[in-house]
Image (cartoon, rainbow, N blue to C red; front, side, top):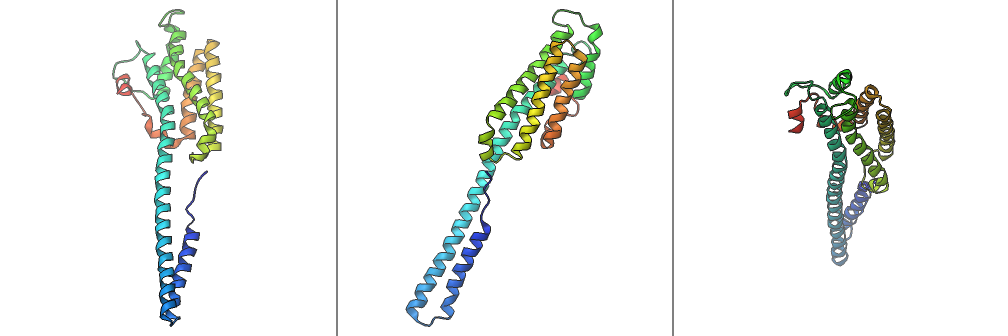
Length: 223
């Protein structure tokens, strides 16, 4: 639940304290004058101190919450990095060492080599796509972990939590469908939907798009 500093309340309290202090210009009795001045000055200092502490604590809490959010999202980013790396790795034998392509282009290359792959063995299309699917399974599990933490995330001020849950639910369904395509030996469609898994994530969370390279080679993605 997002906490907002009650600025209006503090301003009203400060105004009341200042108004009390101003009574010293009206009251001529020295005793009452001193008493009211003390109350007014004490009120002003107390409101200012409380306002400053509240502002400071709120800023600290916002930073801590953002750090938690970044840590959660970094789990997804690491999974996608592994997906990038495994995709280019499974294209081995069909690219030069420093050749750079976008993720989509690597997937296009992967599905284009199917006619040249043996039906069985480590270099078969099924084996290559199965290696890639490991990251998709991890992504699916990470989404499930996020969904289980949703109640806690509400109190950690995770932005647009309801929309985020909807986006991840759609992404989970896409993961499920992509894995089913692999089980059905539809490797070309598997590659196409794997690309959608990435594009859907960057559309839902454009603030993290800079974490992914537009083009990369096997060496650059490992680095």
